[in-house]
Structures are given as structure tokens and as C-alpha cells.
Length: 221
Image 1 (cartoon, rainbow, N blue to C red):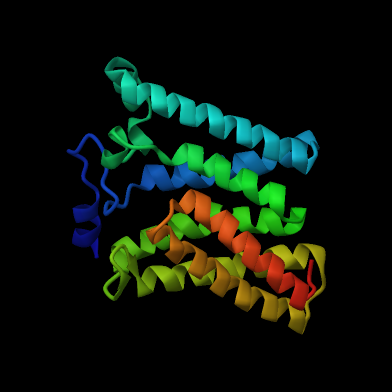
Image 2: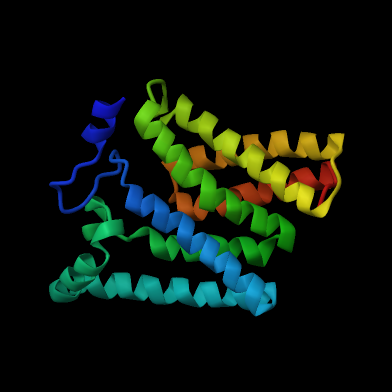
């Protein structure tokens, strides 16, 4: 276990690969999501305002990405600043930040508030934890970059998040239990889809759609 962990943490490399644990990136991923949630709650702004703000952030981030690809000096400066949370592949390709803001924004635009926030919580917690477990313990591959162990971790996290989140707004019931279990499946499937689409975009949008449809059948929120 200890040797496997050390093998994944490539201290000597300037940037991490997708196959590295990259703990700093995962903590950054969780922290930015929670800070965004805190700002939304404390500022008491409308969900529409938050969605538009994130869409603007996404557009600006995409513009910066475009500019850094065309300017080596700018790219070098940004890579130096963001080195702790950047991957090797992102030196010459779009980073996760624009997609993160875009995915959350679209979820807030298209789904009811409670469903949208739950889908964002899936992104905040399930994505990094599934990746962590998949890298450390992922022996049975489902897809090239996805393992059974990582998918089980995604399901478990999404199930627990849904159950705890549901208990904030409703009393314990069979409907909530069913919703949480199926919600865990939806979250795990949306995480699997990140094999084909950026996870920061597909997890909140796909899980948001799935949770919205599920809520129409099992009315919890």
C-alpha cells in the first residue's frame, strides 16, 4: 500500500499526469466547490445571478486559455502560477476551470435549485474521491480510464451525499432511501461519462438531468 502510494506521487515531475494521485488538485477541486457554495449561501444572491456569474467566469476562462495558447510567455507565467493544480496535458490543452464553471452554470440554469445544488455536490465530492480510489485500488477496468473500484466509490459518495442532503429538507422515508440509492447510480454513471466528456461539464449536467427526472417519479425535493 505505502509503496503503491509513493509510486503514484511523482514529486520529481513538474506537472502531474492523469494517472497520478495529484492530491493538491483534488483538494483544490473540493475547496473551490465548497467556497462557491458558501459564497452563494452567504451572499443570498439569486440562483440566476449565480448561474450568469459562473457563465461569465467560464467565458473569461476560455478566453484566457485561448490567449495563453497563442502566447508562450503568458502560458509559461500561468503554468508557473497554477503548477500545483495543473496536469501535464493541460500545458497545451484547455484546463478544467472553464468547464468547471460552465458545468455548474448550466446545472443552475436548467434545473430546480435543490436538484442543481445536489448535482454540483456530486461534482465537488464524487469526482475527486472516485479518481483517488480508482488510481489507488482500480484493478478492474470498465473503460480505459475508469475502474470498477472508482465507480463503486463514486456511487457510495453520491449515495451518502444525497441521503445527507435529503435529510436537510425532508424527514426519513422510503422515498428518500430509494432516491438516494438511485441518485448514487446516477452520479456513478455521470462520472463514467467523463471518459468521453470533461468531467467538470458532464457530471453536473448529466447527474442534474437524471436527478430531475428521478424527482418527478420519487418526489423528494
